Length: 96
Image 1: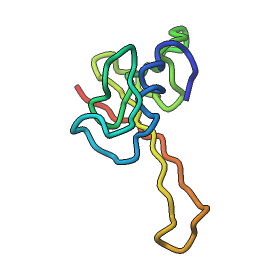
Image 2 (image 1 turned 90 degrees about the vertical axis):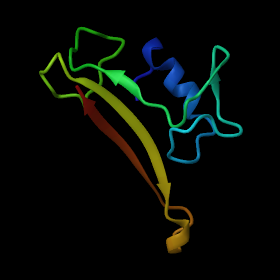
Image 3 (image 1 turned 60 degrees about the vertical axis):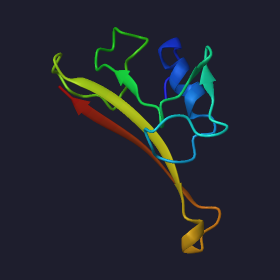
Image 4 (image 1 turned 30 degrees about the vertical axis):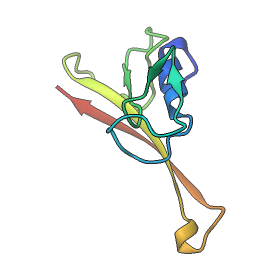
């Protein structure tokens, strides 16, 4: 995930986010400038490489009317007897 200031809230709200949800902040989930998360954080991105703040390599759409958001999460395979194995995902979600 890029480290520009555009992603600051996203990075703060990922701290302590242990469940994929959008029903409000979890106990212990990070806040950003005094604002609680609304659930698992997403962040708006662009495919315009000249926009150094919001550019994300996953965003390959040329459409300017579509909004693209990235969700990042990790799944642990402990229940499948692989206690130290995790799968990381970054998913691009698009909406009009």
